[in-house]
Amino acid sequence: MRYHRVRSPVLFRAAARTVLLYWCVLSLTFALLRLAPGDPATFLLAPGATAADAARLRSELGLDRPIAVQYARWLSATLRGDLGASFVERRPVAATLADALPVSLALGTTSLLLSFAIGITIGLTQAARRGSLRDRALTGLSVILAASPAYWLGLGAIACFTYLASSLSMPMWMRLPAVGMSTPGAELHGLAHLADLARHSILPVSLLAAIGAAGVARYVRTSALDAIDADWMRTARAKGLAEHTVLRRHLLANLRAPIVTLFALSLPGTVAGSVFVETIFGWPGMGRLMVTSIVARDYPVVLGCAAAYAAVVIVANLAAEWLLPWADPRVAT
Amino acid sequence: MSVAPELRLARSGRLALVALVLIALGVVVVPLLSSRDPLLIQDVLARRLVPPLARDAGGDWHLLGTDRFGRDLFVRMMLAGRLSLLVGVVGAGLSGAVGTILGAVAGWWAGGALDRTITAAADILLALPRLVLLLVGVALWPPGVVTILVVLVLTGWMGVARLVRAEVRTVRERPYVPAAQALGATQLRVLARHVLPNAIGPALVATTLGVGNAILLESGLSFLGLGIQPPAPSWGNMIAGGRDLLVVAPWVSLAPGIALVVTVLATTMLGDAWRDRLAGERGTTVQT
Image (cartoon, rainbow over all chains, first blue to last red; front, top):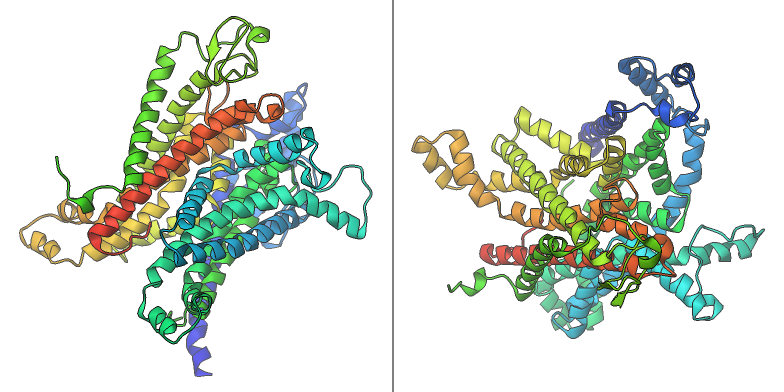
């Protein structure tokens, strides 16, 4: 009980800090949007519109009020959970986000989990045989992947698996669809629908996973090399444990903390990757929504996207903070 | 000149340095030597989409072929490289400088109001993915190199600031700091002349690694149509220009992409080698 009494002010202060941080991020985005030169109304109107049309649209969208009033209105609406309506589609932002967020979350989490599973395995096998030909080849590959822009690799994948595969009349399973989440016009249900979705996911997911795995592998390799000559590793080997047990049980347990930290840090990177991958492969997710709404100056949608992104980053950082004592009991809470 | 072996860069680092010097030379010299204007479009039907190592209908030879408007890809690629290298080096360098100054101030007066303000600003900017901030900044202000640079610096100083802040706080405790103060040196002088030179190593490495990152970000923005605007070439908008030509003329996207990857790869290898050397000097691992 006493433990809880001591902890609660700390937790309260952490929560207050988080809320304050979130409010600052959203206000910053609001300020950036409203301080930008140019009038969003001019982007929305048809070419033949008159000045009166523009004025009417501005007052309709509330853009004719002083910035302070707009900010107060936006803040009070946001606090009530109302994200407003899109300037362009006149649709509630919450509904637009509800369509786009699951797409990005599915794409992001699948590829992130894959990249950690693959990256940790590769990093450990590299560290176990440091300096070997395989280690050097994998290091080279991961450095090249990290230096390559996702959109360029995506175009390359489309060129190979969509165009080249069909021009060489490769077997059907090797020809992968380049655009969208499902075959257009096809009315598929149940398993057939899932299989279609899976086929469409192969290129974007493996692209994001490969780029992510390259980063994870480099990081795990470095962290593992720091620990691999430790005394407790020698003890574990001296006990007669098999090498793979030493790696999996003893080494990996000691890498838990850096891996948890990396996981939280990778989330923004996954977002960045998904902006390009969604654009290339035409997936209707958050990344594409963000780009199209910024270009169209659809302020409510941009703010909604920023709110979602900031929430993901902040929650990931908090989760890492909470998980760190579990990952490494030496870290005091 | 002989250098102590532990002070020399690893072979990969020296190789990367040579590659970067060659690329820098290439992007400066090649467009100067080219006889035709790489932005000029003329006689499109005779010259467009010539494959690499081939002659167009006018008899001109093209090392990397031509794009859809018949412009020589090699010359355009080198011209684009000027912009990319400029944005990368200036963008990362200015971010590093701003981060160093803010980090040094925050670390020297750690716990003070300035430190709290700087740390809070860094926290706020780090709570949004950098790409989101870049997109908002670049899309809303008039597109161009200056906008990109400003946005890169405003969103890129936080990492270096954190590194320098931590280093300065450690170095501040060394005995030569009170010694300098006892000799009557002002706070600013001690910070600039005694603390910073001993604290700046990791920041320089992080800035070097940031060059590649800045180049990638600029190319990404240009690919999305929000960065460098055509007809001015950038590796990003050149790749975008070949996006619908993947079947008939894959070289249009392939060549600028390879230039981009090689450049970013070289800066990364240089940064890594430098970090390893720094770690060797200090006898510890260096986090960047």
